[in-house]
Length: 171
View 1: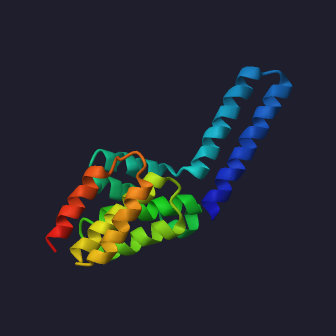
View 2 (view 1 turned 180 degrees about the vertical axis):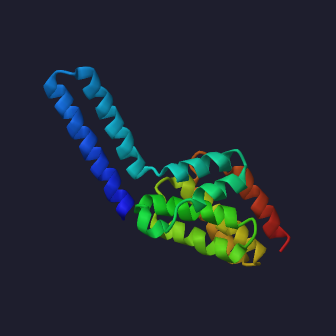
């Protein structure tokens, strides 16, 4: 909670300083300070460690992604609801490499907390379908895959869905 308040307070102070610069006639300094206050406000809505973890996952470097997520101490208190959902999703995807039970719990928490983007929801449900297949829960995986198809409007996960369906046939 303290980190959130500090970010908002810092944004307000920098913005007030910017207004003072405009009143004082220093337009350039005022513009720079307005942009700086916007950047600080952005970190309130987009946590830098979560963005860093996304970057490392995109580069397929799970160790660095996990280290970035581990830098967030007590995520339930520090992160806002939207950030917390993505923290759960990223942590669940990383943990799925080692332990399926904990990964399933984290991914379900991500969905219940509220992922904003439909393709992120689809990715999370696809991961859950893979976990369900590995635990031999074919009916649950079928339901999850149908939800993935509805959420994946651009067809980016089509190949992964086919792979999971092929795995389902072997069960």
